[in-house]
Amino acid sequence: MDVLCVGHASYDHVFVVPHHPGPDEKLVASVRIGCGGGPAANAAVTAARLGCRTGFMGYLGHDLHGQLHFDELVREGVDVRHVIRAEWPTPVSVVLVKPDGSRALVNHRARTEFLKPAPLEGGKPGARVLLFDGHEPLLAESLLDQAVPRVLDAGSLHAGTEALMFRVDHLVCSETFAAQWLGGDDPRRALAALAEQSPAVVITLGARGLIWRRGSETGQLPAFPVAPVDTTGAGDAFHGAYAAGLAMGMAWSELLRFASAAGAACCAVLGARPGLPDRASLDRWLAA
Image 1 (cartoon, rainbow, N blue to C red):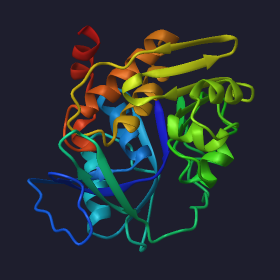
Image 2 (cartoon, rainbow, N blue to C red):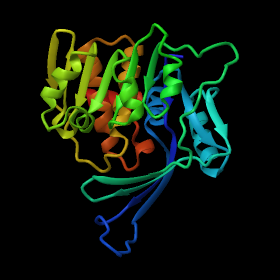
Image 3 (cartoon, one colour):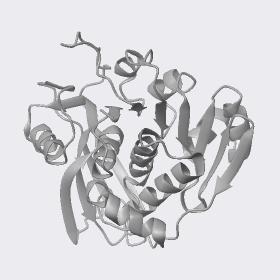
């Protein structure tokens, strides 16, 4: 494989609503979408659509939501040999999308224990790049000894991201994660602190672009302009394209632009999974 994504998969129910519901308020959604979701699963689909041989390692139940998502991954060309299936319910998310493209998300995950790595026929799965989202840290830790670029999608600070954040080669985190880890709201101060312990750090700032530090070099990149339809999955698209770019051997500046364009492209479409770009659509963003 070029990219193996390890972590969370869910099934998303997306509703477009006129505003965020208030107490005891009932709303009628104008649109509903059902699709696979989850940071690592979405990143895997992104990398596959961008032309990489991609696999996903994580959990999907034997229930309806799990089967729907499993079949989606197969249709997208994602290697599902390392998907772990059992009788626990598949995690489910409800996403409320407002007219300005912002969203609220509620996730339910009945299984609370982290998955434990099991002996695999033929040994550990090999990949040119490993991407973790921190939601299955025991699976991630079982692969950390591989001498390939290892990327952490740190969307928020929790036990999994905290355990892995300084054990990877690329810490790609959100502004929320940086603020939770350091305290305060100065992402540049967080960048400097994180870079003391990580070889390469990228902090995404939403519509304000990103800042980065790699070794002694540092910089920033503005966001691609986009009128957001739905911001769900933008970070997943960014991380999937980032891992794909590493597997393709892109230069640093090209890699950051490639991932930024993927995040913007996802915002222009309703639903995280439908919005994940393929190579042709991403090339149009890059050309523009």
